[in-house]
Amino acid sequence: MSILASIHTAQLHREVYIALLNSALQEPGSKHNLAAQVAVTPQYLSYLLNSGAADSYSFRVPNAKIAEKIANALSLEREQREDLLRHMYLARDAASHITQTFRSELLTHPIEYFLKELRDADQEANFATDPHIYKKKYLAIRDTCKMLLNSSLLYTFPLDTVEVCMLLHEAQCILNQTGDALYHAKFARAIMEGLSRNDYRKKERFDTYQIQVLRAEARACSDLRLYREAYEKCLQAEASDVMRYQSEGYISQLYRDKLQALCRKPRFALSEAEGLVAKVRAICEGTNNDLAPRWLFTTNQYLARAYLNHHNFKKAKKLLTEILEQTTSIPHLGPLHQTMFLKTYAKFRWEEGDRTEWEYFLKQALTYAMDAGLAHQISDIKQTYGSSLVPLLKDLESR
Image (cartoon, rainbow, N blue to C red; front, side, top):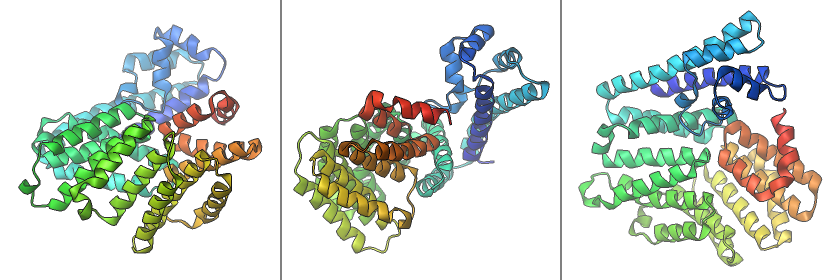
């Protein structure tokens, strides 16, 4: 079994025992009482029950002694207690097995073996429409990247190290670990600044990473609401000498990143936003790439956001209506793309004062985000609406 497959298995066992525990702890005060009985803090118990996984899954698995205390403290039938313990033990065993297997495989397989697994997983996540699969892939990518970055062997291959940092950055952005994402973007950029293009036979890979590390910093800055800094990173990437070597996909993504930062700045010109979309549209119309409709979809939803921020509701409504009508026919739209559009559409309804439609579309966005583990998107929605969101969250959390 591969490392990523082992991580998936561990995640499944952990999700099952969390579900079993939550099922047994539905009464008010039951979690606090269980923590007192087991002699752990309420914070530790909450940590065990949190399926959001801010840290590596292995830190969220109770040891055998605590697992037995928890199971014995609950009012469960014998079969239920045995089932709960079995999944707790299997999750712990899987976590231990992963570490041992990884060390063994690192001695017998080249770094490229792990990179191929990560690339395949990233590709599957990128094309996943099922939010649960999307979440599991990114959790597995995150944990595998962290294990690789803890290995000194990886650092003998600088470009491979940069690639692992970029994959980890993407996963951490999704999971709302933005500080860690920014760190690895900056770490990757520092590595690139110490390398020479002339030392590499595969110039394309080197050139791509030179742009990617700047885009990664820009994305993390945007997630931290540092939009001016994000915009400056995009300008640096755009002015780079290696821009002329980039593929159409990377160029369109850079324009999208630039638009994302631009439309969140306090002041910006709509003409610049529309100009960026026109560039992406020209790229999409001139390519046969299957992802082109998705590139234009994500860019257009940022343009709609720009219209809303400029209080140009007429243009926002026209564009959002067009996007909504096209959504079902655009291939490869994953949970993140759906969530981001639904967020923008809900924002439009909020600005119009239509609370019924706002609630309908925001519930859809939150459902996608919760199922897919899009912690940053949930955090952004909470920051946008504050206390107005409380009834919706309570309704969704009780489903």
